[in-house]
Image (tube, rainbow, N blue to C red; front, side, top):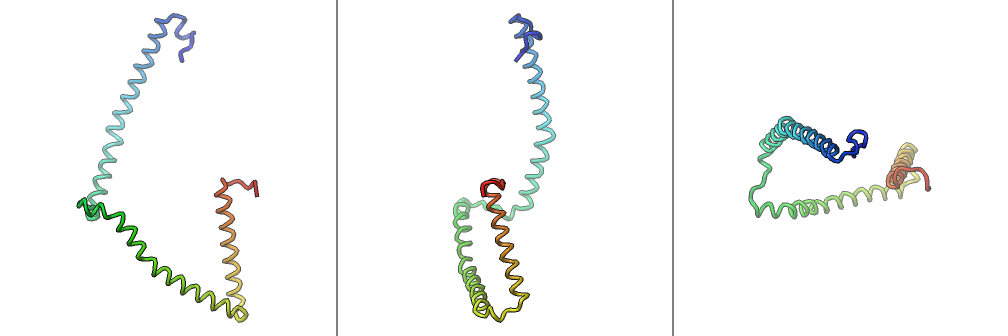
Length: 139
């Protein structure tokens, strides 16, 4: 937008002023492009080249192998599930044994369990607050 006082009411004067703005903006854009070409792109290319050179052993070039990578990742991680389930079942057995002998537990262990339960509940509350946008209103 060009003010009337700067360009006057004359349409020819207004187009000349606008032409000056366009010329100035083109010059600034040209300088920015030159700066990007000389100061931004070369370090980025150098970083990328170095990164790829250091990790060349991990690059898969066979198209068939590349096609299988996603499924391999999913099913490799799924193969770990039985061991995780067994470990969880073992921990559950320990918890059940402690629960069955709860009258014989030392007070230090009961206190530790109570503090842990309170901490889990507190982090749950923090997660609820963050999940609702971080405000404390509406509870």
